[in-house]
Structures are given as C-alpha cells and as structure tokens.
Image 1 (tube, helix red, strand yellow):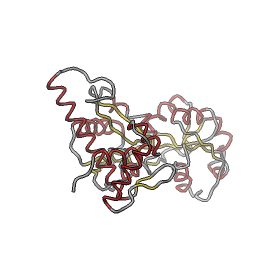
Image 2 (tube, rainbow, N blue to C red; image 1 turned 180 degrees about the vertical axis):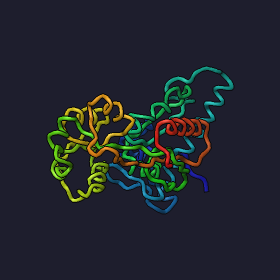
Image 3 (cartoon, helix red, strand yellow; image 1 turned 120 degrees about the vertical axis):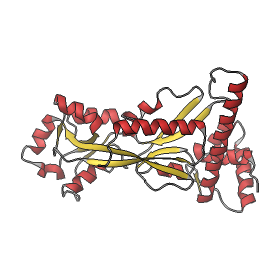
Image 4 (cartoon, rainbow, N blue to C red; image 1 turned 90 degrees about the vertical axis):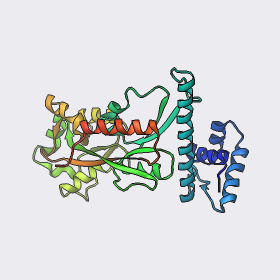
Length: 302
C-alpha cells in the first residue's frame, strides 16, 4: 500500500507540535482539515495513530509513521538542495525550499560543553532543531519519531535506528570551599542533610553519588536549577553541592573556586549517538561531526 503524503505530514505535525491547532498553524490549514487527514489515515490502517491527550502523543504504530514522514521530508529536502545546487549554485536562504531541518535531542551538559564543537560551520541550508532532554530519556523522542538523532545514555538501538558509543561524560561531586567547610569539615556524614542542586526531576546523578557513598535513603534539601551555566554558578556561590562535568569543573578546581567532596571519586555516564538508519548527506555529515567532537572531549573505557 502507499501512504498519502498530506496525511502523513498532518500526523507528524500533530505529534511534533502537540495539538491539532498548532499543527494546523504549521501546515497553514484549518484544524478541521488536520483532524480529517489524521482520521482518514487511521481509518485506512484500521488503528489509532495518535492519542488525543495534552500534548498529543503517537501510539506505537503512529510513531512508525511519524518517523516515516520525517524520513520522507529529509529525503525530499536533500533532493531539492541537490537540484538547486546543480541548477543555480549559491547559498540556500531561510527555511524554505532547499533547506534541511534536522531535529536532534541532546542533554544539557553535552550542549553546554562538547557538542558546540560539532555544530560550528554546518553547511548552508542545514538548520537544527535542538530538543533539550535528559540523556536517560532522549531515546523516547527517537521512538516517537519527533527527532532523527539523539545523544542518549541508552545503548540499545531504537527500532529503525543505529547506535554508536561516543564515550563517557565524567561527573565530579563539587561544592564551594565555604560550603564544604560548613557542611563537611568533619567528613561526609552530613550528606543526609546538606542541600544539593539538581538540574530537574529527571536528573538522578546526585542520588547516584549518594548511593555510592551509602546514603541512598537520604532526602536532603534540593534546589532545582534547569540551566547548566546557572547550575555551576550557584554551586560556586554555595547554594549546594552538585555533580558537574569534569570538563567544566577542572578549571574551577584548579583556581580554587570549587573543591571536590570526595577526591578521586567520579561518576561516568556512557553516551551514545543514535540516529535513523536512513542514509542522507546532512545526517551523515552531522554524525561524523558528533563522533569527532565526542572523541576529543569524552572519556574512553580503558
């Protein structure tokens, strides 16, 4: 059987935008038209493809078709870029015909440390849609088809994707010297009650460190700071202790702005690059860039 392109695009827009109204604005049609296209596709296949929740979510079958819609869009954009390049050489403009937009999920710490080295100097006409998501959850965006690639902690390849190891991001438990002197002058026994920082409610790094030191049942005061830069700044200002990537912490440790809670102890988080199996020049180029940048910044297993 063949799929209707307009119906696939409507389904993908609903899942990616989260509502039928937002999908309609993106597609420049009415919400009724979007609804009719999605319903027609569901009737054609005999199953529900999108859960009408807030936000709308693809079903398992719907995720397969959202991914298909994205792959078709990427192939069309790539082909149009090649045709335009062959007929009228010159840079692509805007986000219109000939531009390739790639949605990528990435954790905040990678985005604030090593990943920018991979993204500088992207070819003209290649535009990114970066979705910030915790490395333990970013693979979900691949499963529902809303991104074509992701930096993830999941080594198991999502269906329809390839996974390759990037290396490990190393985290150190750090605090300001004044904070450490106040709470840990006599050792780390105060970890059960010493305030800590965490990125958001998905961030489990601090709890992993507590468990490693035998404080797994501890429920200390928590400050939520959903910004990598502000997180480090506030640790340095003594708001609490936190897990900071060593690529960021090392310079601050050397200058005395931060100190380690338990020198020599660290947490390594293995990262993987997962992407659609689809061969497309823009995606292949991005993959090469990510792998090279990760090799220079992340830790490799001995």
